Length: 184
Ligand code: IMP
Ligand code: MG
Image 1 (spheres, helix red, strand yellow):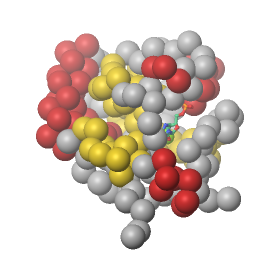
Image 2 (image 1 turned 180 degrees about the vertical axis):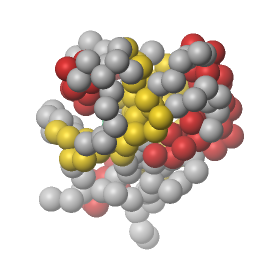
Image 3 (image 1 turned 180 degrees about the horizontal axis):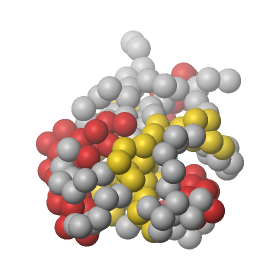
């Protein structure tokens, strides 16, 4: 029999939608009277980003950036690099980074440094998912959707080897599936 890809659904589409609305309301309140640059970290955060920005009611500028930190496997390479930079100047602007998941924290600590060196007025983070127990560097999101256990997660933008991003929910990838489908 073919290996089942998932161990189960961790967060349903409804649960995610409810939390995204709450985050959007909180962000709208905190940024009232301001006009932040809201940055989508591609590709993983795209679903979350699209849903979140539609729940933010202050004027925003949208930017996208692509960062490599994981490659295709389930282990962090420990290094982050910018694959595609943003074409919006952030000097003197409030920057809100939208990320799918924080694991070691290396990607976000690298990005915060990038925006601080570009003289952003403020840099904040909203992360849908947070694997707090995996942290290697001290970093706390300003807005957190859900604290999640240490499993490899897919769906709602998150991938394994570029698959499963289109799922409307977040599922736990079966470790046997990961082992037998891991790109070498
Ligand atoms: P960090 O730099 O170790 O915090 O890794 C963050 C990045 O790793 C995220 O933006 C994701 O792209 C990826 N990542 C971490 N955990 C998972 C997971 O469980 N599923 C899919 N991608 C993940
Ligand atoms: Mg990512």
